[in-house]
Image 1 (tube, one colour):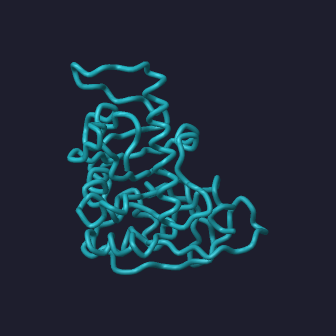
Image 2: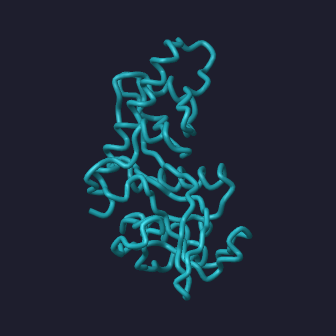
Length: 233
């Protein structure tokens, strides 16, 4: 994905990690430094365009990733740069992975709500022209190392078939688990069918994280309360 400004100079490293502050990374010595506000605006433009591209690829009615959402949530975004692409000397973006911790409520076999807080995969996109080149695994693996988590400790909402195949290929995911679930904040709301991955137990050879040991029989899901109307209408 190309932009009218110098992506290569804006993101010196191959993978850039951004939080809610959207601070421009430190630049290489000898590079021209535009005003900080201009750099942040460029970062916001990249995030907005990546969010739109991801929503289009997933056939979502609206983006779930944007600069404004990043600024209002404690999410972390990993952006992968194409170091070999230099259109007009400006570089390009391969894709991104957005994660964040969420407090989730799941039902046990007695229909009691239980609260867990796993790291959740919130959005994941690799540009269509650059898929099947190992970029997705590179980005995902970098995130796992940076966040110090194992794949089986993650949670994800309604994964696409493409993402399921990705997890199966690289992390030996075997199956998914459907569940009917009430929104705990609105007990009289209708039931929503959520297809989710029980990442704590469905990876071949995976071990449960210690922080999930008391919920060994509970499936993990991701649910973004800020966007439920978009996800389920």
